[in-house]
Image (tube, rainbow, N blue to C red; front, side, top):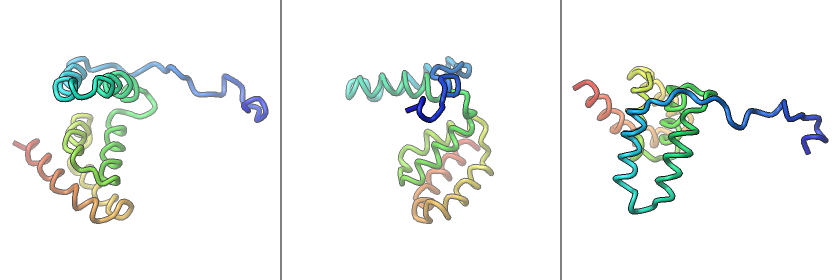
Length: 134
């Protein structure tokens, strides 16, 4: 198919890019949390989370960690999944997203994801902002 369309191997994206540097302390904390919380529930999910998500996808250079976090928070809000948002909004802010920018994400998503999804996410955001200010 690639040959028929004139796509050469060198035109394809690199399958194994140089990954961003790993924050070993943060990675160890995430791995410990996931392993400790869900290790006995599903070793497969825990292993995939650590290997594919934390040690590959999150370190790919095509998006900065801040942007990848912002996309993740937006996806959770859009999908109506505020339960996972606290962890990811904190991580987004650790990755450089400001409270003002996070508020802007909420306002923007109200028009694209729906007011109800955003209002379901607002208490989570409020709590994250409050806890970070303390």
